[in-house]
Amino acid sequence: MMRNILRWSAQRRLTITFLLLGMVILLFIFIPLAKMIFSTSPAILWDTLLDGEVRSAIGLSLYTALIATVVGLVLGVPLAYFLARHSFPGKRFVEALIDVPIVVPHIAAGIALLFVFGKNFLAGSAFHAIGIDFVFAVPGIVIAMIFVSVPFLIDSAKQGFEKVDVRLEKVARTLGASPRQTFFRVSLPLAKRSIFGGTVMMWARGISEFGAVLVLASYPKIAPILVYDRLEEYGLDYALPVATLLIIICIVIFVALRTIAYRGERA
Amino acid sequence: MIEIKKLTVNLGDFLLDGVDLKVEKGEYFIVLGPTGAGKTVLLEAIAGLHPVRSGEIWLDGREVTKLEPEKRGIGFVYQDYVLFPHLSVKDNLLFGLKQTKRPKEEMGRVMEWLAELLGITPLLERSPDTLSGGERQKVALARALSTSPEVLLLDEPLSALDPQHREGVQQELRQIHQRLKQTVIHVTHDFEEAIALGDRIAVLGAGRILQIGKPDEIFRQPNSEFVARFAMTRNIFTGEVRDGDHGQAIIAIEGTEFEVVTELRGRLHASLRPEDILISEEPLISSARNSLKGTITDIADRGATRYLTVSTPLDFVCLVTRRSFEELGLAEGEEVYITFKASAIHIF
Image (cartoon, rainbow over all chains, first blue to last red; front, top):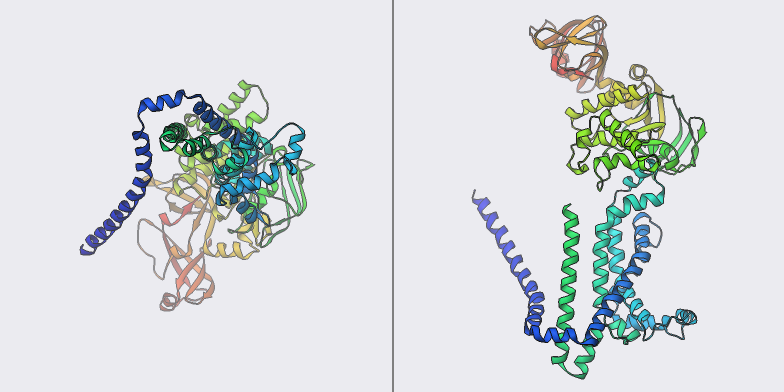
């Protein structure tokens, strides 16, 4: 009895300690966001929204991040499935390579991309021949976003596929499904939540990208670059409403997508 | 009919080595082996789901060794059912039917017929994760049968079920086999399951087929350590179970009748563990017990215990401790009484 009480209170102390530590980090995330949103008056936000330059920058951000994500889905999901189903020498290396863009400074990633997609380099000159330029152009924004954000999608999709029991695929084969049909009727639907989660992450990460885009295509301006420009040229008062608007739009989209994802989970 | 010739499959640390099997059309064939003997891999190789190193697999006169699994016409049921979790029971059953490109109404008819056959019609709209083990097993069976496979492969279909469901599903398997004349290969580590269901049994041990034969041949003349060890630890008989007095059941085995506790009736098997048999020099008076007089015909010394064979004239293997063996002064040729409870006999 006595020991039970002791254990209870020790358990409780630990829980309370963890809760307090957790509160610190939660406030650390919450306060700056809330302060920023509430310190900008709705009237100013509305004016900012009517500013054509702001709207086109935010629109460009959403659009380029979307294109990047679609490319990520088409090229990344097959790779994720391959990695989830096969083991081969060097697999660890490949998996580490995929995560490298997450760990390198993004400004360095931008420079690395410049050395491939710049007009005087390998891929850059090849694409230039068919009329696609990257530097100071929309395709440059897209590849910068793909580079830094596709690891989130690949990792998440891979984990999703790994959770699908291989024997479900085997049973599908005995029921007459070809490998391709098995992928689309069994593996993909069962991994779709992880893929969807990865897609949202990739898209969000794309929208928030700054460093790599700055090096490769600081023009046309995506929203983070516009915020930076206004901060540099006119000061904090002019950058703040744009930044706030960007944050609000991101939060709304993020919450909406999460809601869709969780509704799927309950069904 | 399915024929396997010198099949060799790599199992990582060992081989499934030179397996030869021939299963007749409509036969219920059991592959019996301990865990890790390569039973699942053998089935996967037959289904084309596991690469084969050498050898041949023939299905109804056509060689399928290198054929894709979807073109073989094989039904597969895994031990833990492996239903598609994102599909309803109905869509699980329709999965294979949709691949056959039949008209929609016909697919619906086949699906409903299967659901009825297995008694799962009320479950059709349910999601697999809301079903009990026995229900899942029936859905998995119906799904495997949906494509009218040449051969139905069952991987330990009863071992994930609790005992009360096991008997029901076992009956179900027997009925399906009889009604559909379905050729079945069923792998198991359970000796009683093998005897109850198999027309013939192949014993698999350490990657090789050790013995093939009818159930009684396997347990009367075991040529493998695995079966012999089992035969030593079980008394197995075949007899006719009917109603007895006072709601009890009676099994008649070669003219001798025993009280048993079971709901089953008909020609069945009975097993009795040697340690459940009591040996005494005088008859034990008890109404709820089976008691017989017999002669000790064999004594096997196992250190702290002795296995005695008592001929009544049915042969019973009985286990006694060395101490009671000595206290009773037992010896070959001596007359003793053996006694066991009705509930100690397992009918299957």
